[in-house]
Structure formats: C-alpha cells, structure tokens
Image (cartoon, rainbow, N blue to C red; front, side):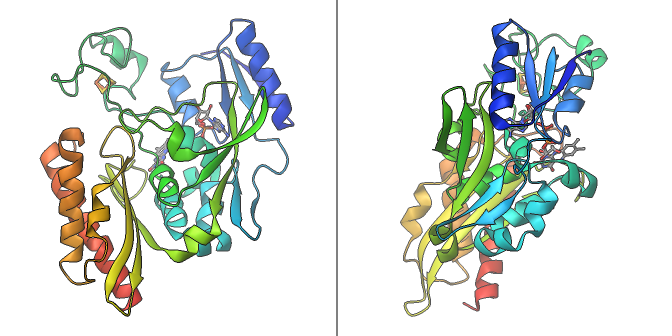
Length: 333
Ligand SMILES: Cc1cc2nc3c(=O)[nH]c(=O)nc-3n(C[C@H](O)[C@H](O)[C@H](O)COP(=O)(O)OP(=O)(O)OC[C@H]3O[C@@H](n4cnc5c(N)ncnc54)[C@H](O)[C@@H]3O)c2cc1C
Ligand code: SF4
C-alpha cells in the first residue's frame, strides 16, 4: 500500500506524468477527491505505484455557461454541482443526483470527474484483503471462475453505482477528454458500456470537463430519484433519471427519456418508451412507462443481498410512476 504521490499543475503536465509512469512499466492512478480511490487502495483492490493528483490544476473546478451550453469542470465538487444555479436551471436532474449522492462530507470532497470514473461495485468485491483471502477468487477478484453473488453468472457483473452517470446520460452530456494527442469531446454515453458499466477511458486520458447543451436541457422537464438501504452514505441500489416534454394543448407527452442506473451493471437507456410518445398525460402514464421499461430490461436487473431481483424490478416500476406523477403535479398537468 505504498505509493509515490505527485501533484500536477496543468492538464498537459498530468497526462505527461501519467504517460511516463505507464511507459516505465509502473501502475498509476489519478486522484481528485480521493473518496473512491483511497478506500480501494486501503483494501488492496488497487495497488498503484504512483498517484497523480489533479487537485492543484487551476480552473478545473469552474462551472460556467455560454450561449449554447453549460460547462462543469471535472474537479467541481458534488456539493458545488448540486448547489450551482446554472446546473439547477439547465440540468436539474444532474443537480438533484449530485445532491443525493453519498453524504455531505463526501459531497464536499468528491468531484464530478471522480464520480463518473469511480470503480464498479459489488458487496463481495469492496471488502478488505483479509476478507478476500477467506473466499475463493471470483471473476472480479483474481482469476476465479465463479461469481459469489450469483452462481449462474459467467462473468463479473459489478455495478456502476455512480449517481451522476444516469442523470448525465439523460441530458446528453459530453465529456472533454485530454490525452497524449490533445483534447477531444465525446458523448459520455458512447464511452460507457451499458452491458458491463465499464468506461472506455484508458490512462493516461482524463476528463477535464462535462458539457451539457442548453437547448436540449431547457426543453425538458426532468427529475432524478434513487433507492438505497439508508437515505444517506449508502450507494444507490436503483437510480432513475427521467425527462419528459409535454404539450399542454393536446394534453399529451411529446417526448420522453428514462435512464436506469445502479440496478443493472451499466446505465440502461430505454428505447421502447418512445412508443409511449403522444400518450395522454393522465394517471396511467407513469404505470405504462414503468411497465415498458421493465419489459425491456428483463433479467438484466441485478439482485443484491439487500434487495432481490424481484423487489428491484417492482421498485423500478414504482419509482418511475412516482417520478412521472411528481412531474405532472409540478407542471399542473
Ligand atoms: C461511504 C461512501 C459512500 C459513497 N456513496 C456514493 C453514492 O451514494 N453515490 C455515488 O455516486 N458515489 C458514492 N461514493 C463514491 C464517491 O464518494 C463519489 O463517487 C465521488 O464523487 C468520487 O469522486 P472523487 O473525486 O473523490 O474520486 P477519486 O476517488 O479521486 O477518483 C475516483 C476514480 O476516478 C478517477 N478519476 C478522478 N478524477 C478523474 C478525472 N478527472 N479523469 C479521469 N479519471 C478520474 C481516479 O483515478 C479514480 O480511479 C461513496 C463513497 C464512500 C466512501
Ligand atoms: S459480481 Fe460476482 S464476480 Fe464480480 S466481484 Fe461480485 S462476486 Fe465477484
């Protein structure tokens, strides 16, 4: 558990330092708030030789807007994202997700970049070295050929439990990425594998900012909800990011997006709900959307020792219905 700590003072400097670490055959990790990485290092789940801190890179924590978009620096804390007037105005589901993640101290330290890039979790994986030594290795730890959580599985299905990711996918967020060849911008959804939750961002690449288009965001009414064992400190077991457009004159829903997180290994964006477009905005709408999403997700829902697959499946429907009814009530439709 010994590593060399380095401060980076520019994005380019961080990328170059990480590239050098890798070229020399060493293991490296970036660190921002450290609230995900440090527990993993303490548990010997990761064992980097070098840890390169992004915290002293100036300007990377700013939240700004221009005519087209809002830009959230990768080092903006979850607390800053949750309380930002700009984020609340143009991407309310993202602000709500940031405000519901973890607990107050963790939201002050944890950053949006680290939240996206946090490791996938499983109750058999996020444990101490001593604990792991008492179990045969599984697909996720070591080179085992078994999954302790579900013996029917033939691969590791740890879950990406980020609160921010489903909300960011909902609003079509883009990630600015710095790498050895310079800066590029990608749709966040395009680098996250929905089946496994694995994020395709190999080192020395790093996220510098998240961009959310204003035009898209302002046209939608959106909300975020999560279910966890306790209301605070616990990771979500289900998260729902939902956005709808209404037409008051025809009393119909004109577009809808739903992204389910934490209940499946990767974030799940429903495609089938587009068939519900032009449905009247009535008390059946929430139930219909919930049923449609569950028909599509099917057996992908991951049960845990806290909540069975059946219970989580039922709760996804309940949470979607509640969110739809909350949005209807807030819009008076
Ligand atoms: C008790 C507890 C409860 C928690 N509950 C929740 C919860 O409910 N919901 C939730 O979403 N999270 C939760 N977390 C996880 C964590 O606190 C948050 O996800 C936090 O936002 C992580 O940000 P960080 O800056 O601390 O990440 P770090 O720990 O610094 O980094 C996390 C990972 O991301 C990488 N990384 C960091 N920044 C970048 C970047 N800019 N570009 C590329 N890679 C980067 C690091 O190398 C590391 O692998 C919890 C953590 C704890 C300890
Ligand atoms: S999901 Fe299964 S294989 Fe993966 S870490 Fe958990 S127990 Fe191991």
